[in-house]
Image (cartoon, rainbow over all chains, first blue to last red; front, top):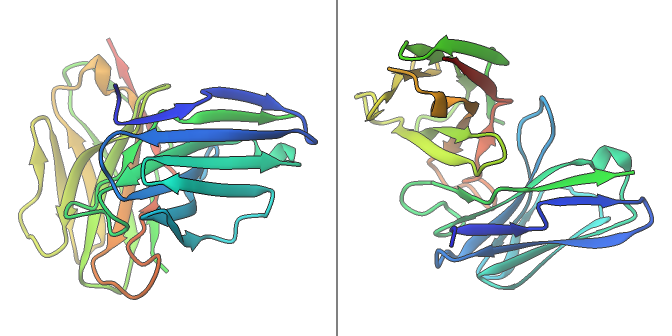
Amino acid sequence: ETGVTQTPRHLVMGMTNKKSLKCEQHLGHNAMYWYKQSAKKPLELMFVYSLEERVENNSVPSRFSPECPNSSHLFLHLHTLQPEDSALYLCASSQDEFGGNTGELFFGEGSRLTVL
Amino acid sequence: AQTVTQSQPEMSVQEAETVTLSCTYDTSESDYYLFWYKQPPSRQMILVIRQEAYKQQNATENRFSVNFQKAAKSFSLKISDSQLGDAAMYFCAYRSGSYSGAGSYQLTFGKGTKLSVIP
């Protein structure tokens, strides 16, 4: 069982659909993150949750709605997306919001989203 | 705000040879951390190596080592005895070492360098 698991791995949706991405971590970490990875751009931090409370929201459009029901699970709810939202969405976790003693993030394999 | 620049979008190396990936960063802080992450195709991104700015000694992890030049704000990654499994996207990242409010410890990533290993 890998440390951080994301589902689905691939998702195709229309602009009017509602879908969700799921992330689960089995590392006992207290912080979880959503990143957006687009080609030829740096990773963009979208949301940070620490102990199930949102501590960072980097001006993400409201069509992306995160949910963190407990410290092991993180969701990204998607609705009325735009084609430019097509990207790889990465979930990550760390010991705490400060990255723990090492500052290390542990990533999932990502969910490849295509918006038609 | 800190920025991280990786000037080489793509690089290639012959198997068993050595390759160096470049990274420069811009910051006014003296206390920070630098990282190299590796993202193989369709695989998870993993930490390769980490450097604390206050340490003068360059970090080393097996075949991976860094050349950290604090004054020049340069942080290059050297991969020795390259293997086919080293083929991946490599991301340089910066993290502040001083807490100055929510988000101050978040990682800033470069755009990445795609490394190909030629058999």
